[in-house]
Image 1 (cartoon, rainbow, N blue to C red):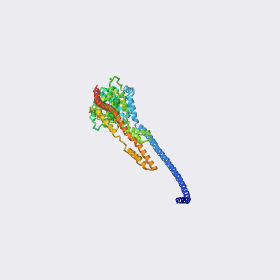
Image 2: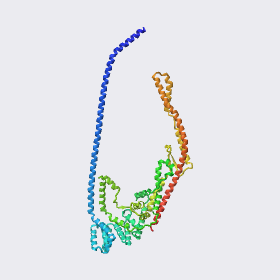
Image 3: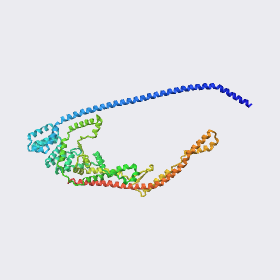
Image 4: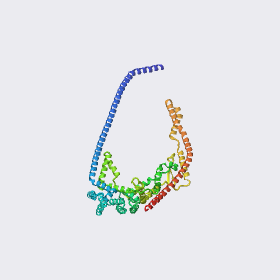
Length: 593
């Protein structure tokens, strides 16, 4: 019976297979055709994608080339505009130069004539009548007509009339010159009389010149005058008048040196910058531990040290400069000649307008035609500026004598009257140094950047270093306590172990092997965590013991160095200001010698 059932099942199976075989072959053939079509469509899609990509790349390349062409066109247009601006500036420069030369030709003649009349050879020839009086009159007579409004024209006539001993013409010409420009004409008169040895007349003219000046608007020739006065080329009486006038000016300036007074604020800042340029460097080798621990604050400490040492360094510089007794020969009217040349060459107000326009055109040419750049440069620096205020003049004479042509004697004279101004700037610098002194220094060990503390250098505790070291060690120990097991890894390990022990025996086949593999991987991933935490805690514990010794030594040294630095800081600030005051007082006491 059983055999019949098996035979029947086998027959049914063969019948089903024989009936399904054509259907299977037909389905397979149909699927193969569909797959071929899909492959063909995929290939066509890929080819189309490549073509689209190539088209996009071509468009990007074309856009890049168009952008480059547009940039080239813009550059070309900008260059054309610059070239046009440069050509226009060239034309304007030539026009202004030619126009100025034609407009002020008579002044150039007056300047040449003035240089001739002040030479000893020409003056002697006129006095001795080697040159005929009529020739001299004819040479200078046109100056009264062509340059009547410019002070040098009448001044030339006055000098010639004095040599010709024609007092009436001389007085008339000096009156016209004084009306045109009182300060320069009286200075010219004083310098000319000094060259000729008439110190009495030179002193009177120098007094009138000084009275006509505004200390807020001194001419550039005043540097030469200061040199001539210091070298006593104008005589003792003229020097006395100058000292009296400088004293009054200095008192007026000193009364405005309060930092809250807006007058001369920019000049005060300039004087402070000059003071700060003379600073002593901070000796880093004296504070190695403090510099290492206060790395973030050290730059501010160095900047503050410049303020603390500026006054003392400046005082030392002045004392060294004037330590030697002045034994060099006095100059023979060299500074007077320089001052006369500066007066002769100084342009009038109408000439200054031309010169500024010419300078602007030159800047446009130098910048390649860029008018905005040239305008910015001209606004920052005007070399044709007419005047300078007394505080700026005194600051330059005191700190940068070589740049303004001031000699040693003139610098000493200027310092005698700049004392109050410089001391006020020094007090401002010292006040900032006191404000920025490192009374409390924040330190941070490199090994433990998340721990910070402040060293109190002004009122330190007796055990400050030990207290800070204990605090750092406590912080390190807290770091060791924060080392904990990774619960996620341990949880995966526990689940994996449970899977191996519980699920593997009851599962069958591939499922059992999956449980076994998962369990082993979880256990392997979790096992290192069991040893990591003890090792890390042991390492931190050993590091804590080493760090305690290192921290105590380092912090104890930093505390000692901070106290030394603060003491030196306070001493340098107070002593430096005191030395500067004494130095300038000594120079001021010499001003009436």
